[in-house]
Length: 428
Image (tube, rainbow, N blue to C red; front, side, top):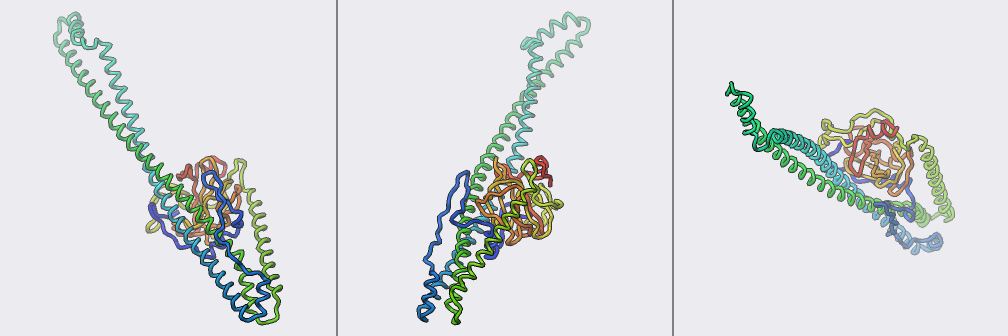
């Protein structure tokens, strides 16, 4: 994935993409949002008084009544469109904040990991220095402690009477030994102080990471709520606009075509939509066969165009550290859920473009970026099975060509997907 580390930007979600995003969703009345282990049922804010077909039939017999009813229906349609647009814009803005919060969290984690590694290394060095100084001190103690000089003189007077230089050499060696011991203790103390300072820095970085982790979670919750509102608005528009437009056509029609004919057309389109939804459900069930015995599936087959880790920035404003793996694939290639879980994000997300985030449980989540416009076929709160089609490959957001940006996150922070997927029998 190609994106800034601290800021992302992206185009507003189009109405057409919003409709497609909701195509596999559930009705607003039954949609649930999973937040931090709790389930919250959204309340509908789109209740309105809609005309009935009986009202339309009655109004057709009177020109003034028909004109009034046309005005009412037109206003209802405009209001539905406005609500849906505003809700989608709010969801897009919330998605941008999620992207920014995730960038900050990842940067904080990188800093903490670096400082923690340095702290551990310095702590080990301090331990080695202390051990070395302790061994020398123990050796001095075993040789006589504070009386070591007199012991040395006594021993030398018996052993080296014929050669005074031997005694001088031994005394010089002992002086150097005691000086060396003092230096060792000084070095050990300095190493200990340095290690403590490094540990304090690491602790501060950990606290900052925890704070940003909480901010990222709060941003995600806000985005989830915004997405649910957008889904409700789009569902309301979809569920009413077709019938309202049919009513509008019937009111404006001066021929003898009956209201029943318009109603029949609405029913036929609803039946076709239901049939298409059922077909998608069957396809999703069939896709579950992609999962292995461990419950994991390869999201997309293809070469890894850009792996996890450092890299040259592929575009202006793109990061030099890649938080996932880019798997090359053709436009509109189906993307499969890597594991069963709950969709916690499905929409525009800054440099990720059209983005899906699935909570796989046990602190693990998987992310799928750059879906094609209109390619997301799941919605927030929806449970998916491993191998189920959730989206389609695109090149939205910070991207230079069609591919899937795939991430594995542990406790909200990205980790290298390749070893993780290999360990779970679904090598990418």
